Length: 354
Image 1 (spheres, rainbow, N blue to C red):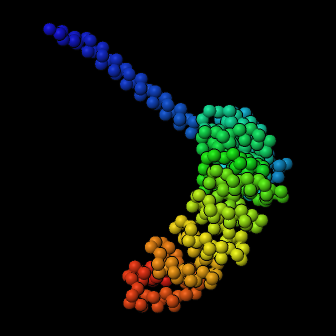
Image 2: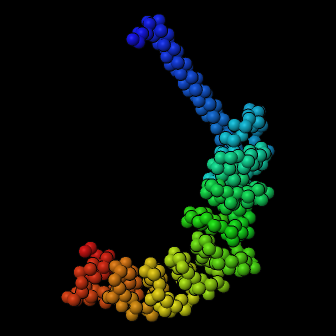
Image 3: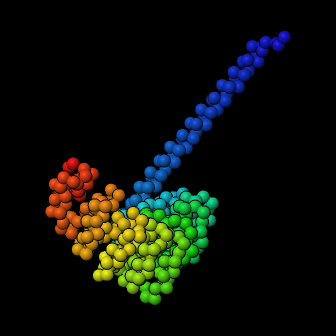
């Protein structure tokens, strides 16, 4: 038979469990106290940092009083990282002279060293944060080191590196497009476009090279670049993209061709329309709607009557309205032979309730 545990043994087990519970409670209390102290310390630091930034923006450098406490804390690594973070946040909120004064604080306290240290870390969010800080503070001398992260496996890192190269080097920073294999998101494309302020002369070959990319997002970004700067020189290259394998590239090509405002564009659209995918046909009709070119009227009426795609019918009806053919559409709704679906499509285009 198994022996029954003695009362003394059970008492020892109970004491052991109780000791562990008490130890755990003490550890939790110490951790909570440590976090509380840390929060209080950061609140004090933030007050000092905000005051420092405010004084730097409002007053001239010679008018700012020396702060012994601030100077002392500015040697503390945790303080310096918090200071750097607040400078980056503040720089994004201001412009002009205020922005320049914030950047002066960055260099005055040598905070670029803190940002550079993050580039040597293993964690992606730290590397990306360091790149962002160097970019915001316009550390052009760090561009070569940042360029090494253009092929980093983390999207967070390589996207920040892409943005940094363009922010620090302008159009020249787009050189990564020639070798980019991963998709450039729409948000990233917008960031890059906003950072480009001019296109240098003799950039034709580089832009043509991007049109040959196997990465569709590179071609799409290049088309948006053409639209932003109205690069009429590339009209024929854009027209050639109407035969690209990607429907999305063709759609962006349509938008770019409309933006470049060539009088032959709508005629070309009419000729290529039958051989295009449905989504590209819809985009062509949207382009026709914007152009209000009457040469497309017959095709619009034909597609409204015969096309099997409700989407095409809707866009065709909207384009006919833009071209001034409301009366024609109203007459169709009154014709007894017109189907209910057609009537609903026309009324939708005329912004009427079915």
